[in-house]
Image 1 (cartoon, one colour):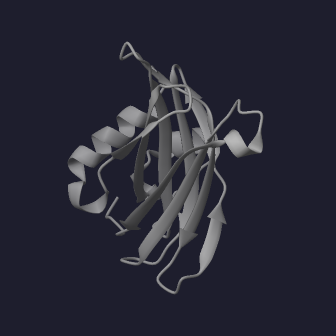
Image 2 (cartoon, one colour):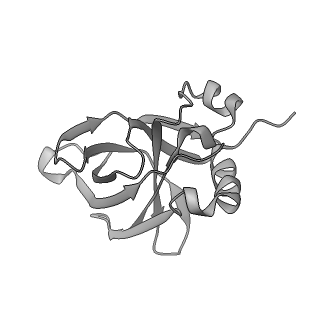
Length: 160
């Protein structure tokens, strides 16, 4: 049996659960090396994951837990796209303006690189994710910043 591809699974689940998942979105940034960088992100309820996929990546499936998935794609001058490693910092703020920093787990599947973060939420609660992405190979702290985005998401418990 072929191993499950997390990205394919997420897209497949989204096509069947449109109202319960926020569609994958992206932001585009100019990199310090002249390349363009795309930051793709999506948030969804952890029960959307197949139990085997959750087990493979040590993620907990629960109707009270959400997952934020972030990936960074470098697009060079010729238009070639390549997933790149990064340092991802996520600060989540809830309705009461209470901040929480989320840890990210790097997942590498073939040429794809994902950063997954799990979080606890209350159904329908508006959560704001301030995401800062740094170049993984940068040497000087002042040269690290690559992208900063804000994501607003409402997690709705599904029937999955």
